[in-house]
Length: 457
Ligand SMILES: O=P(O)(O)OC[C@H]1O[C@H](O[C@H]2O[C@H](CO)[C@@H](O)[C@H](O)[C@H]2O)[C@H](O)[C@@H](O)[C@@H]1O
Ligand SMILES: O=c1ccn([C@@H]2O[C@H](COP(=O)(O)OP(=O)(O)O)[C@@H](O)[C@H]2O)c(=O)[nH]1
Image (cartoon, rainbow, N blue to C red):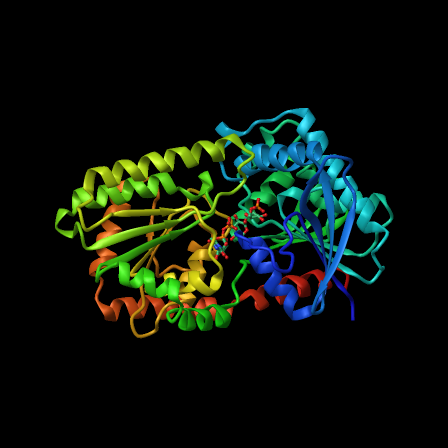
């Protein structure tokens, strides 16, 4: 049997705390098959990039690379997170392009390819993940690697005209044609990629998912919406209610309902808009004041990038402002926490909540939405309020869907969720649970890998 080699910038090393859907999902996928996980070690060093570290856990072998401070700054904080991330999340206003960080990005991709190529066997199946590594297949091919190589983009792909506004857009995005299979979260992302290929990368669309690069070489593309380990989340949630931290939260609510938000502290998640929508709910529905407490969990993310630090300051001010305006001596409307919680606790919080507020401005998928569904008590499920701009919206169509920019709409959805009769909550939840149960993380992995295997059948 071929060995699975997963490559991603973020690697969930044994014992490390992780917030972020990619690491959570790939760990669950690799736990089933075993294989090699290659990527950044999570360490920056004073000297040169390139030192390798190896460890094992069960059937997973981890091989990770240290990056120099300069490479990390240019590749991760710079081109990946100040250029590509805002572009991919439809925020050209935040894109900061410069050739120096683009060079660092290409240098780190070449380094990854250099280290990995020597260790690959011809029948390995290589599966590369996310926007940090768009040109990796091209670099591997230049080093003689002939294995099958697939790519999965965890974030949205914006419209072709937006991509084309990026200077040298063909270097990172045209390089996707070097893969055998390119996977996206949704059909819309796939359609936008096909437009880009046709309009700006000199390729052709033979039919949906069957594509030709500039030189006429065939490759494939498809939509593979990522899932979660549904039975595990459901089991953890049922157990979590006995955990002291979860019981403490329950006791502290003093009989009030809980609304929860769980996001990395990222401007794509729409957290300031959500805080404002919660304040709007208190204005539009004054009779509900004191009946609902909103808990926002937001572990700090990408603190080396200015926009993320500014967001943290904005949220601190907003939370203070809302609490100052609406709190009572025995009720604080917004609880805002920057800690990262393990799933064993988080799933208990999800289960306790009457409402989840998952309102990103743009999101590739949003695993929190799916985890919230999986964690519910089937007899008394909570209500998911979900942005129609999250990848998850296509599958979770019986959530209360909202436009996160429409503060009145989100405010009224909170009121609707709070009042929703049990029978309707159950009906909506069953439909969503059926989907997250059927198309889970294992189905996602199998689906992608069998499509990759079929590319050279
Ligand atoms: O690695 P970080 O810079 O700390 O960021 C964490 C991850 O954020 C992004 O996650 C995405 O993947 C999820 C799973 O497919 C998806 O549900 C979510 O919508 C995406 O935002 C990023 O794409 C990952 O590379 C990061 O590791
Ligand atoms: O305190 C936290 C906050 C988040 N997460 C996890 O981080 C992932 C976030 O994934 P999502 O797809 O929602 O967004 P991303 O951060 O990848 O953009 C989910 O599995 C969350 O359960 C976590 O384990 N602890």
